[in-house]
Amino acid sequence: MAATDDRRPKYQRIADTLREAIRSGEYGPGDRLPGENDLMAAHGVARMTARQALGVLRDEGIAEARKGAGVFVRAFRPLRRRGIQRLARDQWGNGRSIWSADTESRALEVDHVSVSEETAPAHISAVLDLAADDVMCVRRRRFVVDDKPVLLATSYLPLSLVSGSAITEEDTGPGGTYARLAELGHEPVHFREEIRSRMPSPDELTQLTLTPGTPVILICRTAFTGEGRPVEVNEMTLDAASYVLEYDFAADADLTNTDTTPGDPA
Image (cartoon, rainbow, N blue to C red):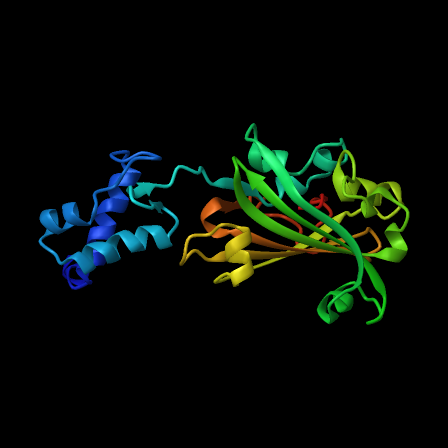
């Protein structure tokens, strides 16, 4: 195994050494990492090799470059997104934001909110079992934690269900969209989330202020009523370096009845 590791490019081995130093606490959040000159001297490598090693850590979201100052350990503490607990009825049913399960006491801001009436993309209409020309309520938000944009969310809801309600306003009130749906007689009792990842689009790169090489996590959540009717599709784009996704469930869970994970809009 060691021989195999030794055959890897030098920049990867240097990156491993730096990564381990960060994990062990030798370099803490906000600390400056050895620069290119330091790595060249310590490891006997060319400048390009040292630059590539630091680039690996930047691409992984572990470190960030500051113009004219060097490369530093990323100070932002990743959010732990508890995929099941955050959607529990106890959250939104009691007027709490599902975000409180993620952010704990950290500062949260929704700095961009827009609500419009649109004809949704065909794949959304198909999930919500609507005609192609049906109008939907579309809610777009950007979520910021500790002054760092971390998530973009777009929710689609049938306008026929939510017209005239607080869901069509920027501020949906305590408990968010799911609490308002419950008041309208369309309480979500079951959720399905699909997760994948890719590299960000130029717009996502800008909106989430991502460092080059950082991927995004895509989560598409559909909310269903007790009768099995889909009432919302929420497409979310997460900064992969800002999140840990956590799912905690029993091994003997009844997979044919998942009426245990109700929720809120992001």
